[in-house]
Structure formats: C-alpha cells, structure tokens
Amino acid sequence: MFDYIPTVLRSQEIIDKSFHKASNIVEPYFPKKEDKIRKEITDRISTIESIACGHLDKLIRKFPTIETLNPFYYDLIDLMFDVDKYKLSLGNIQWTTNKIKDFSTVYIKKLKSLKTIDNMNSVMKTYYGRFSSLINNINKDLLYLGECKNYLKRLPGIIMNIPTFIIAGIPNSGKSSLITKLTGTNTEIASYPFTTKEILLGYKNINSRKVQFIDTPGILDRDMSKRNDIEKRAIIALSKIEGTILFLFDYSNTSKYTVEEQNNLYNEISGTFNNKIIRIQTKIDMCDRMEDICISTVTKQGLDELNSIIERGVNDYYVARNQETGY
Ligand SMILES: Nc1nc2c(ncn2[C@@H]2O[C@H](COP(=O)(O)OP(=O)(O)OP(=O)(O)O)[C@@H](O)[C@H]2O)c(=O)[nH]1
Ligand SMILES: [Mg+2]
Image (cartoon, rainbow, N blue to C red):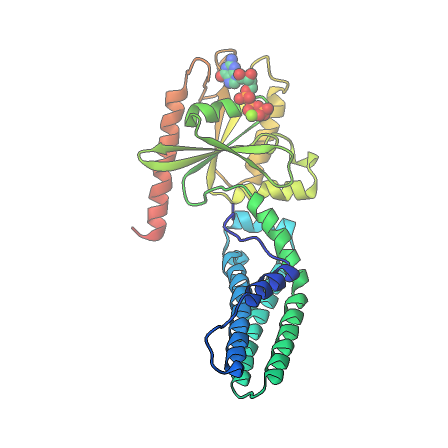
C-alpha cells in the first residue's frame, strides 16, 4: 500500500544532487565574459531550485493527508507514528520549499545589476550557503518521513469501497482452505502490522463486481484478553473495514478447541466488532451438523449455499450504498 510515495532523500543527498546538476552547466556563446558568467550563475541557481523544490514538492503531494484517510488506515497509522510530528514535518518541508523559491528569485534578480565577476561569484557563494543551510535544517523531518514511508508501504493493500468478507475462526478451522475455494488462486499475501502472521487477500468477481476476502490467521483467532494493547488496537482497526465476518466453527475431532471455547471467541468478536457475522460450520464431512450453514472444502458440500449467501451480501452492499449516495 502507498507504494507510490517516492524515496525520501536526506538533506545531503538533495544538496549533492542539486549541486552536481548545477556544476555541469556551461554557457559557451557569449561575447562578453561577464554576460557568460551571469548567465551561468543564473542557470545554476534555477537548476538548484528546480531539483530541490521538485523533490520536496513531490513529497508534499505524495505523502497522504492523514485526516482524509479511511479510518482503518488512520487507526494503524496513529498506532505507529505521531500524527502531529508527521504533519509538522510536512509543514516544515513546505515552508522550506517556499523559502527557496523566494530567495532564488531574489538572487537571480540581484545578479542582473552586478557588473563584476567577483561580485557575481560572491552572490553565488552566498546563495549556495543559504540553500545548504535551509536544506540541512529539514534533515530530521526528512528522516522522519523516510521512516513513515517504510511503514506506510508495508500496510496491507485492502480495498475500502468494495464488498468485503473477513474470515475468522480458531486456528486450523479451515480459513485458508475456504478462501482458496472461494477465490481460486487469486490471492495475495500481506503483512499485518503488530502481528507475527500474514493475512491473505483474495478477490473474485461476482455479477461483474469485485469482491474482497480477507483471511486473518493469528488475528481473529484468539481471545482479546491474551493480546497486548497495541495488538488489540491493530485488530480493532479491522472493524473499521465495512465487511461481513464469516466465522468458522470446527467441531471435528481434529480441532484442539472445544465448542465452548469457539463460542466464547465468537461472542468476543461479535462484541468487539459492529460488523455483521455469519456462523459457518466447516469440515462437515467429518462431523455432525450443529449450525445452520455447514460446508466442506473437501466434498464441496454447502459451498453453493455459501456462495448464494455471499452473493446476497454483495447485492445488499450495493443497495445500501446506493441508498446512501441517493442513486
Ligand atoms: N476433512 C476436511 N478437512 C479440511 C476441511 N477444510 C480444511 N481442512 C483441513 O484442515 C486443516 C486446516 O485447514 P486450513 O485451511 O489451513 O485452516 P486455517 O484456519 O487456515 O488454519 P490457520 O491458518 O493455521 O489458522 C488442513 O489440513 C485442511 O486440509 C474440510 O472441509 N474437510
Ligand atoms: Mg490459514
């Protein structure tokens, strides 16, 4: 996610890049040496300005505005870094960009009235000095944004405005088998912050609309009291995704969890999340029917019924959304 954010250069890298480009500038065709030097210095200043401000402007444009992000991403970002510091860093960079643009114009104007090469060179030197010190002043902001970028790009690329089904249930209950059955091989693995396990994102078109499935091993499979605070908040962020939870119960003798334990987990998740939850019994080829909806990914029993339920959920999603937007 957010992989469109550019690499954040450090101050020294911005200075080196701008100066290097400027040092290549040579103006050959001027009869008077003063005019030649004046033109060279003018072009160097414009080059330095455009290289540095070009990079900084891009950072300002590409780093997300936190307030307008979806609550799911907002929560995960708020857990990881100081949102005020993030905003302040972008603000400092904006200020510095404006400052460099302003004084580049002033210095270029100044050059026009200078008669001697010495004076011109001394203006150039002062310009280089002021430029470097302004860029050096934002080094800590650049380093901070670099860290933020690294975190942001690791966030899972969950799509927010399509119908979504989140698969939950105790370990080994058949979550991954189900997502594979539902979506084929159309899945991608993403890391989920503050948990050691990876989540699986799967996609499928239903009535030509894209539908998203999220498998959450190690995330929605344990009692919340066994989680630390950060992990808890990272998990609660999932509830900001407008999705239906498919909660899997495994009553086969391969399960290490009792019926009661599984119900406790179900109750806990339904208490923590506002999402709609559907109870589904898995591995029905190996145990007796105890829930209304029963499936087996081995014999495919119940999968058609589950697919119809999902399809109805997708239709409901669009009906609700169209009502909201007034279509
Ligand atoms: N007989 C039978 N076995 C199943 C069924 N679904 C899954 N299994 C088996 O159960 C085991 C666990 O399935 P997974 O899909 O990996 O379960 P999971 O919930 O993703 O497990 P974790 O990711 O470890 O939490 C595997 O050996 C599957 O082959 C089923 O419907 N019937
Ligand atoms: Mg799994």
